[in-house]
Image (cartoon, rainbow, N blue to C red; front, top):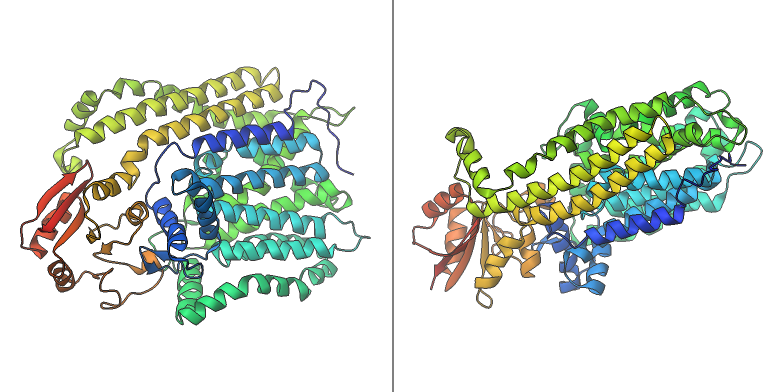
Length: 593
């Protein structure tokens, strides 16, 4: 039976209320800012191309076959776009729903493993993790991967961890594990199987339960996995004979072993500060939670809660080790670690603040450490309160002029300064709300640690809304919408468009048609594109291909980002173009009549 902890004052919100508040906060923030570069514009274009062309097998970015990711997330985004139209809300909705799915899975896991109070805490903690706040309203493959990984971990827990030594493994739950891993494989490839597989594998090796290892590896589970995964991969191999090598070897094996063509190398300890900062202030309970597992390792198997704690520790440490040895690293790769880590932290906090009836409250020293770490965020909020002093664009311009010219580069466009001023004002407000919640938490934690934790959570929820508002102001700076608007407002029917220099990935999405590229790299599309393979879409840095393309059309629009690219383009195309329009970042030129 799960542990029953007391909450006599009724201070914890119910799991349902936490889910409702989290859903409202998430959904409100989705449409507040345009799609950002590079990932959101890229994935939204791939999904909309499926709707536009009817090709649901081969993902296409800017009309070019895209080999870097499997299709599950693109299918989800395309379905959302079919219902809600082409807009930021529909593009981001699958990520938000995946986040809410993780919250539901945590509640359904914590209840039978521990109790209802821990379920409420787990949902509250996950919804207010800074990493979750920052990434749950962004179109990324990784939140869908996080949901499939959490589902696989929960299914393996039901099938192999929850049953006692005298109980048989549960075949339906083991089948659900393989099914969830299959969807993870369709979301991001082998990592969708590797992360949950490493977790349950580490647990079974530690417990030396050969019988359960055999139950996990019975042929029916892998066969179900293959039945779900194989059709798409086989179809892609039939359509693109070099796909399997490009995807599995260069996109996965080489990223793991050498980093491949991606400049994402980082030291082994890279993810430790990411987790430390991304899980503030709750990460303060981590030393106590892992110490509890180590201290009780000899008796963990005697109760469901004990086995669950060991399993959760394996589900954090085994994937963390796998991600750390990989040469290609990005901060959001740790998202699949957060659900088991959150549940482990929630269990520790519940044992400290919500003891079983008649039990003594444990020392809260470890939990207070979390609020000391959270003090860094309080300080950041206090400093951010001074940011409005820089909110006047004229003051920002004056500050920019003080930067040495060698460091400043090109002069700062006034439009950019105005946008930056708005961003800074909203950032100050978001951090001030967070600081208020954490300061309240600090004042309450000595007298009532639970209410202090709830105050910190309220501050993080407020920061979540403020963060969405800040992104709404920052959107024009980092979005490709302004670049696409230049073309949409000036392009003639069927007039070709060239994106010269940097590929602005959201432009074909907003235009709903491909643009020609100066260079289509393998790092972008996951495949090598020959010099003459796509003459209307990729010039592959060949001046003669660019010149032939421009000469073949009565008029051509060229989108250029930066003075250096303008100068390079002038050398390649001696005809003098007409400047059609420009923004702070982009210049639109027309060659021809």
